[in-house]
View 1 (spheres, rainbow, N blue to C red):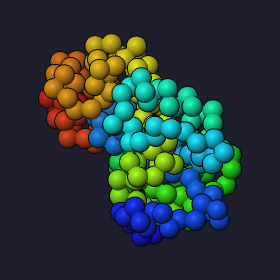
View 2: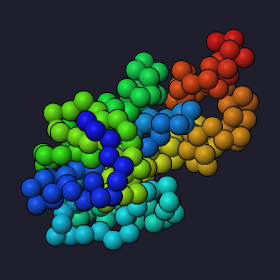
View 3: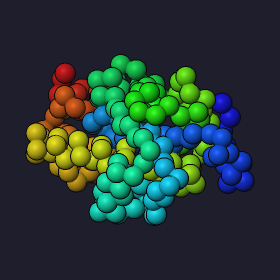
View 4: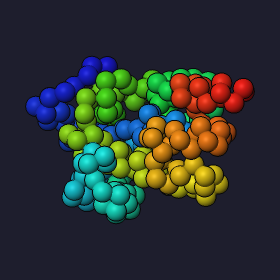
Length: 207
């Protein structure tokens, strides 16, 4: 499973002979909430304009593109691992598991999975890792958008459950606001206890 970081190399993938799915994750860095992964097979007969790394798109543009991807893609799948699974497996293994589940959840079996980053999940589907692939490969960009919007929706729901933590504003990332609320209100069941700031808050609370 070789890492690919060249647009020239990416162009060598034969889309006439390969059924390609793009795979990306969202939520490795946050202190709370699940890590999500998505896999997308685009339909060449229904190209989607404006695909790029989800982090470079506005929230409204991501939401609009996510709706188009779900409607027009040949197949798509979203999977996640919970905070408890992240604590049990560690974030790398939980991310790889979410990616594998996303690939396996596709309604159409791809022949090649292009994975954003420098590691590939264990999967029956042949895979290649592409550094910064979410801004180079349309299928990975689409997966990035689906993973990000799905995770954001879950954090919005967590905000309704735990309004004191402002999950709707920081989405679980270790911002100053989140750290302030964490120390003020303590650790929720949705926090990743294996992450250092959460461990520190638990220690301070005597847990």
